[in-house]
Length: 562
Image 1 (cartoon, rainbow, N blue to C red):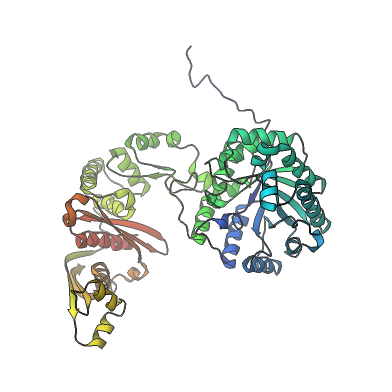
Image 2: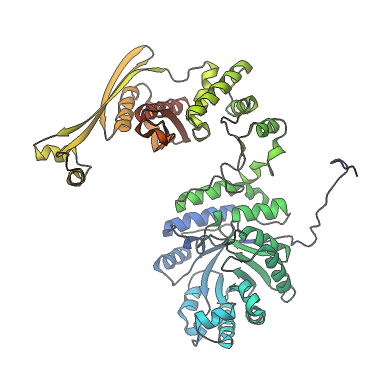
């Protein structure tokens, strides 16, 4: 049978999907439980504003009454310090304690006093956890749900119930798990959130169980998946297919253990792939910037390969890919990157062809003729063979491409440089202390008893020319690279005031061929930044100072060029 693309038109039946799904973000509560994340109250305000701007329906702010930080957060929210234009702030808590009246339970009182209109309370939906964790019986556990929901509803609050361990509970004893949902719905809960607390439920089972729940309730069904099996996003989509109309998760997939469902993938998958409306369409393009803002606040860098929002997910490196993209951008892109606020990139390496170099030049608005492109390609492959790695050094790559345009943007020439490092011994204790104030000299001497008390002194001198004028500058530093940086800036700053806005933010060294010992080739990468952005530069040599010098000069030249 013959088949052509033109005579095929595959249709997806979307009739079974809900038209809309509410996005419930729990970054400030469940997400902050990730190891390494600690948010101040100001941090939580910043994250909440990002989420509100993104347009999620609900922001879970924390657990009032559980700690002073969350108490302050809700108190200041109630005082008007946090204004939300799009989202509803939700306070999280639990059902009443066993054998306690709802009206006397401290947790429930804290929820009422939290200055919010909606709350989410967690209840055990697994009979095993009721017996082993709560150490009570099923009847009391169900009474705890009924009493708590009724009490909160009577106090004018919208109530969501997090059915903890629901999927595991169904497999263990579905009768009890379903009675928990019934107790909550009958008492006035507006949403029943099915939680895969251990994160082990696979998508097909998630869909099957949510389908069964949908047949037994008219309440809103929520889906809350953890990512321990790597399926949190897929299971969330399966739950929506089965009838869930609220999806819980975190920006960047933060959360305990392997994290929660990543909303940065869940939202575009639902809306752009499945046609289910989540946040407003025009706000989906904010996903990448919100993901990066939140990552800065929590101080955890985003994985470059994170779906949709990572810096590398629309980057192509192979020559066959980039040549195809030049003719048809969607050849290797599953969506238009701008839909989620991201962008395409061409990665240049030894795998590149001339079309890749041409695309990169076009991306940088550089006009390079065909013959020069061929020369650059040969040079680039030679340099990568020697240890350069230009995909990690965007600044050095652009300078290499600019060299072919014969336009010298920064008018200075390096004539020479020198670095002298010496261990200075002194009998004058005050002098030693002064020179060595940033080092523990006693520890150094104890660790290396053959050294006398003293200090390591590094001095660098640079000789350069600016518009034909010879300039020499000398400076001391805490090491060779620091001394060279200071000397170079000292010489150039009077002629290039913008240099004062450029800061070196990171310095990394990698030994390329470890088998040669101290004669090994080293690769130095320097990250720099100014108010407009950041860039990376590279140097490679069997002399670590020379490699550092290459990367350092490139960093300054690139910054001044831009």
